[in-house]
Length: 350
Image 1 (cartoon, rainbow, N blue to C red):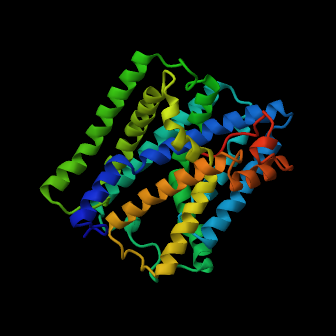
Image 2: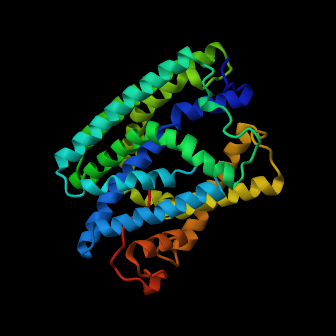
Image 3: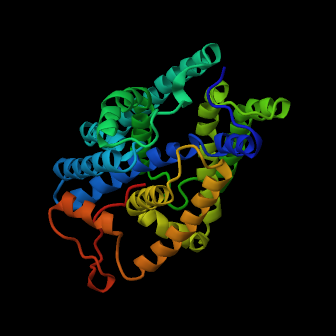
């Protein structure tokens, strides 16, 4: 018997989530994290700094991630990014070809691993991959700490290969200037968009076909389809955004750009707001239908977009970005816009 059965509106929402969101966006974020690391190293080089500043940057992220995971949300990703980020340091002086070779090789290994896992879930559908993490509802700090060195450690070994491969490919893309204006001809970008969409929808099609036959959605048998469609549709989303923002049309994305410039702050504050709401209303784990959590996510996005735009009118960066840069450079960066100089201090975390 499958563990992750969804019925009614929950089944449709989970199907659409797995087809068009799940694995698609962490692929993009991990890629951008690697590219932002390249931009950070380039900025650090202009300051006469280097690996030491990068190590402090990842060390601070590690502390933030541990605090976030233990005190607020066991599903934290900052800790994983920080630990894998330290592995980027030896690649700072490696040739572009070496970085790309390692990146593609690790992605190939990840595809092999996830293919085996996807096949195993078809054979052993009772695998607890999608079951409840904690049996007694909301865990305390001690349970979260235990979870970090058990489940998270295993997940790091399983998913770390793919994430680090994406980091390296993003680093390579930054070095080669893939996203510089005009770097990719419009016709080639359109072709990439069409092909990636076709491949992504083909990989996701079995999920829709299964749901059409039986409108009860199960996660486990679709694990491999979710993973493979995620890579192709991630490329499609990036190519689509590049086309929409090209030709001087990037102004239309300024509201979302504000959210991105404060990604670190928004990531942490969305946990604080959500956990606070859950505890205030005493909502039991799994009690809400997926449509309710979807509405909350949309409302939170609107709230954080408005807050980010308003904040950045007066300040150069979000409050957590300011603390992160303070830890990285060991001096306080200018916060208010009127007091800010022209020189930046690195990129916000994707």
